[in-house]
Length: 232
Ligand SMILES: O=C(O)c1cc(C(=O)O)c2c(n1)C(=O)C(=O)c1cc(C(=O)O)[nH]c1-2
Image (tube, rainbow, N blue to C red; front, top):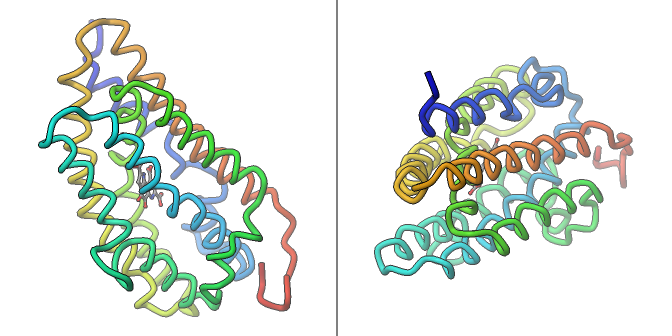
């Protein structure tokens, strides 16, 4: 029996998700050094700050007020409604809770080349792709709430030197990720009308899994240098 598009998308989002990446496995098992964890926080900030940029590119492709409102909310989740609010601010606070000054995150000077390429790849994919492909690529979020829960537990248990308040970002993403992925899945299933559309949706999600995987490859393989004694 052929599998439905929803089953295929859920299988990709599960089987190719970065929760199986060796770096995440080490993170969840409590095996990362403080320097490695700080390197991840610093490099992942590059991904976080580009999410609203790619969501703005997607919003520009949507042709009804209802759809644009839906996507604008994602931008606001990250950028907040005012200074000092939103996901990007919460990620900066995560950095501070782990001993990284916000200036170091904001300059981006220490972002690894492979991370820049992975993030550019995702932003450009959404810039150049169809709405179906761009929205399908966001469906890694089907698996994001699970990894957030695992991460919160791992941080609380294994990395007590990170102040608890810094984990707010992950807590808020559990609900946001569930809502975002349900909305995106609904759109993809509505828009994918032909077998070719279905293949493009699956390929887009596969590509996005590869983006997240390559980002972690870069972080995993970087030399740990204790820059300025701050542990990156
Ligand atoms: O930490 C993670 O493992 C993780 C994964 C993903 C994802 O699966 O794409 C996102 C996030 N976090 C995240 O914080 C986030 O805001 C986000 C937005 C998107 C997207 O593609 O629109 N994915 C993710």
